[in-house]
Length: 327
Image 1 (cartoon, rainbow, N blue to C red):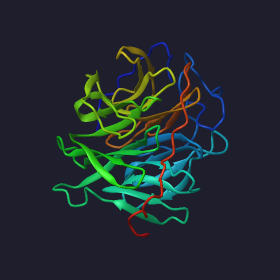
Image 2: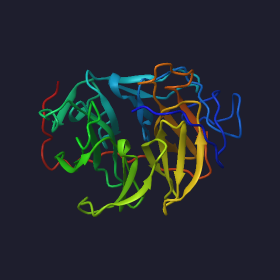
Image 3: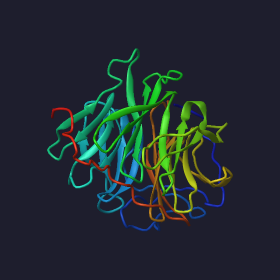
Image 4: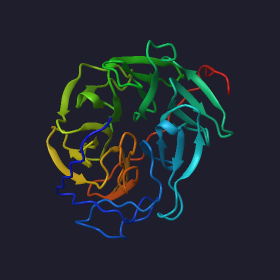
């Protein structure tokens, strides 16, 4: 995706490049305008997405490079690489009770990343698709199930899907006819799911049966006319933060769909967001830009008024052996 670089500001203030992402580190150094976002780490990612606050710290991916990264040390230190796959890596979640193991939306399906660097593929449902496909964004719901979207490399209309990885490791296609799925994001009770179809500029809201994960009929939550809604996260008040690709902004929408505030960035392609308590972390991208600016691809941090929650780990119930072989 590409887009224009509109720069807007709202109650959250402006954005600067100065200080940055560090677990437990306040946002206070560097040049600031209106208390906005800052970036200090030197990394400039091609397609930074999938950022999550987990019980293992902040993790994120550089999708097309297949890199899993973490933010550790001093907030000016480079991101540290945890793993690199030979296929695109959309997003991960920690696996509960399995230290060092991650479940990942990668390549054309879902795999486990083992501590020794090996992978175990649970399923590759898009491997034989009519057009080249890859996984995109993914997350866990509050009950520890893993949801992951796929898209074609060419962002072909309606080629993408949403998959559910249940507690027994089975992978099921639950939605199709999506062009570029991003999110999903869930409310704290797990009864509502937000899913963006970025290429169509729409975020839909689905009721979810907490016991079965069955999705009810969706409603249009927000339509974005000036960019593409990308990564999302829900805060403790139930508001939805959305990275809006092509606009240089991140926006907070209230549960009734009203725009509450806009945070401007000196980067044209915000792609992912997460909340680490009251720190909003934002990934951006350089991909597709003929002349990237100095902060395109940076990771930003801003302090916000309403905190978020720790991302849930994927919970495998162990009732059946996980499929797949290590590679």
